Amino acid sequence: MENWFYHPHSSGLSIFLMGGWTFFAVYHILLYAKNRNSLYILYGLYLICIMGYQVTFLDNYYPFLKNKPFKFIASIPEFFAETSYLLYFVFALKFLRSSEEFPKWYYHIKRALILLSVYCLVTVIINIVFYRWTYATMAYHFFVIYILVLSVITYIMFFRSRHPLRFYIIIGSICLTFFSVLSLIFVLVYYNVNNYPEWVSSYLYLGYILETALFALGLGHYQYNIYQERNQSQNKLIQQLKENESLRFKIQQKLEFDVAQLSQQAEKDKIENIKIRYQKELAELKVSALRSQMNPHFIFNSLNSIKRYIIDNEQENAVYYLNKFSKLIRKILSSSVEVNTILSEELDIAKLYVNIENIRLDNSIEFKVIVDQKIGIETFKVPSLILQPFLENAIWHGLSLKKGERKLSLEIKKLENDNVLISIIDNGIGRQRAQKIKDKKIHKRQSFGIAITKERLQNFSYNLKSPGSIEFIDLLDANKQSLGTRVDILIPYE
Image 1 (tube, rainbow, N blue to C red):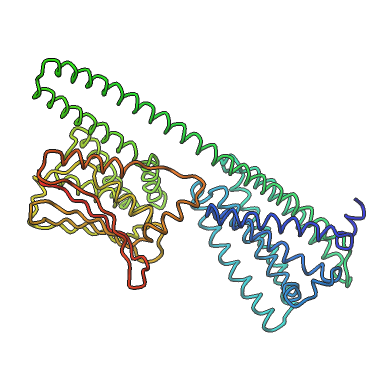
Image 2: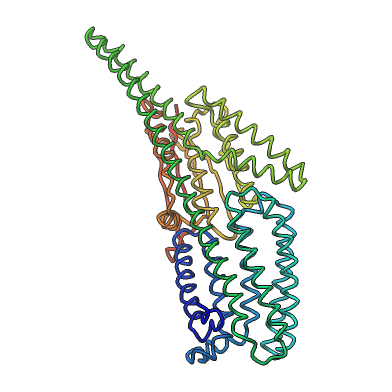
């Protein structure tokens, strides 16, 4: 043990640690590829930077590190050291969700990190191009002082945090900072010595070991919490489905009893009325199920977005969207009285819903509604909330995952037979790519909204001149690349 501490390089301890860090880096990068959670890629890159920094101290002990790629890595240790600290801060801030709990602190710390990143990039370029290695050492000492001050400010915020996993970050940060500064002090003491003792690096290794171990435990705890939340959500969904099934079974038993009584009396007209009533009650159950399928976090996220405007002192925007949110809730509650509604009311709900969801995407969606003037939207009836599931799909499975321009349009046309065709068109990533992303996710949420809507449209079309229909169309260019998705909903004239 004593030999490892005083001779970490020549004893093989350092190369052993690099092997362990390599394993953990690859593991977390693979986790990112599976879950698309940036915490994993940040941690993996952080470990890579730690290893890049250590190559400088190991090339005299391991001949293979003197090859060209490793030789270049060894020539820029400051780059890896500075980048590792920057990644460390970004990881810690994201892990504790500081942007939500301390938005003002987060804003200033983020600007400080951006400024420091520019400074580090400039110094690295000067070092590589002009070979000013003395300047690089001085710049690195300034960087350490800057980071130390920034660490103290950030730790104050971390100590004030109420995040349940904050102590993993706090203790790990203190360990890394303490041993890093201690190691730097020893380096400065032995600065005039050509080769300062190996044991100086042991303090830095100790800080890295404690910090990486605590961060790994924190990520494990974080993943455990996600699984717990998923299991709780699944249990609630199963319980809700059981209650719905029990209610449906009771209604079905009652209606079957009524039908049996009427069949004994051979009253076909009453039997038909019972069937109609049965279908109506089932339709009402479907409407209730559809409302319960709306994302349970919708209200929370909408209020959170409005809260962001209040925190940023954008009172006008906050009042504007709060009015829209209250109006949407009022209209949804009003629609619960009737299974069907007029087209104008459905369009109002659709506009309000898209506007509110657009807040969470920084109003990046260009939304248009085009209505044929031949349609009497104040009299034409449609199933209530028929558009919401398709608008939700277009926004969160198509547009939210798309970079660049985002467009969503709602086109309503009157056909020759007085039927109405409603088209929902988006320029998102397309259904195939959205399905691939969904398949990669660990936490999958099954939605019955579209299936329920199809069944409700069939019930609505019952006894009408023509049936309703729903068709999904993939929009492709000449090279078979996705341009988005169009959903055509045919509503028969009542």
